Length: 147
Image (cartoon, rainbow, N blue to C red; front, side, top):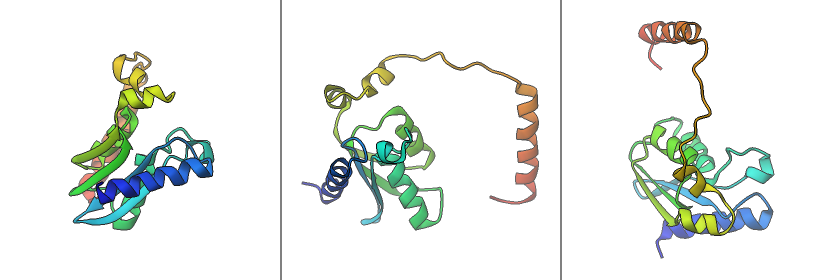
């Protein structure tokens, strides 16, 4: 068994036995060193965004004091959902290893398969000119200083 996946599994077990949420544990590694880990805390925090991958990303960013996790690898007990996949991509993590797949999570009552198999039409553009003003202000500030 892979040493990092073993830690992810231990994280998942810790979470489920503590009643924090589903069986999802995650570890983030850079240059062979664990820099972040977490497990699902949706129930504990009463927050649907507290998936194992999200908690591990928070932990890794805190450890490295950056939002850019370039050069990191992520190990997780289940194939990332669309939200976590988006966060992984935004964090610049380019390699993900997962244990269980979307069909496996579906079998135990999670609806990730539903999100991957449907196109959702729940959004609508609203007040674009006013929002573009904020974008312009941001760009002007960004041009004056670096973030």
